Image 1: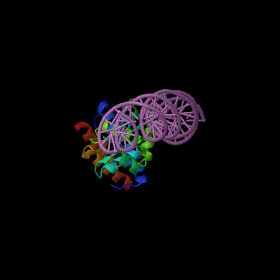
Image 2: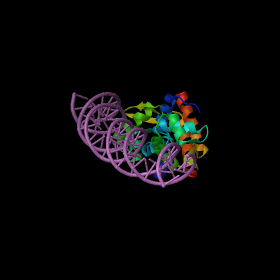
Image 3: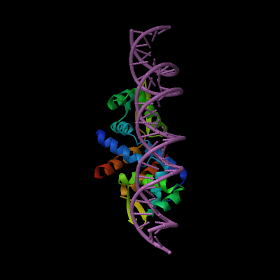
Image 4: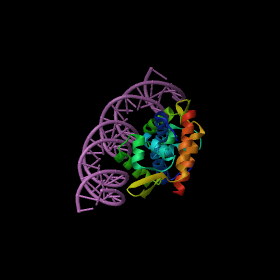
Length: 96
Length: 96
DNA sequence: GTAATATATGAATATCTGTTCATATATTCA
DNA sequence: TGAATATATGAACAGATATTCATATATTAC
């Protein structure tokens, strides 16, 4: 398996985005469909601010998308790679 | 998507194992077959100690296996979940 | 216009993580 | 036996990360 240093870094960044339990639960919530920041925060038991900070990172990595409507911002998963990684990882965890 | 807190943590731990460029390159080396600690260290441009520390974590998470032969220890990927996660992630990075 | 609401952002802080260095253990060779 | 080699491990330090708090921006309601 040949791998440039740049791709190794990109890949590590992708997995880093999934390397925190709060973000994992956040993503699992988004799997049911788009949700506003405050709804996510409530579902996670976190402050709106903390969630907003996390979403910033996920957005920047193109894992989630933002849709603004009025004064709310609805977030959703950007593509299906995320959920596929998610379920594949879950597979490993459950058979571990 | 329902997800217990425990599973969220386990999942995050799994992805954490892949969240570092050195470990990504380490795993990519192991995709070509088992390798000793010193060969891995040389291939990565890291000290044996640093690699050994990383392998400890990966071993503990059952992502790699150790086989001792003489005074060398040969490491290999534990199952194919790892390489599947790896290639799926690479997919995302390349089409990003 | 002002007040209230939803989200974003910067700074500060506490915790976690990866590497280095020194040292320990285990194995082979002479 | 002792020297050399391969790996492992603990402590310490530097850098990264997640959350909190205060504050800013944007939108709606009055």
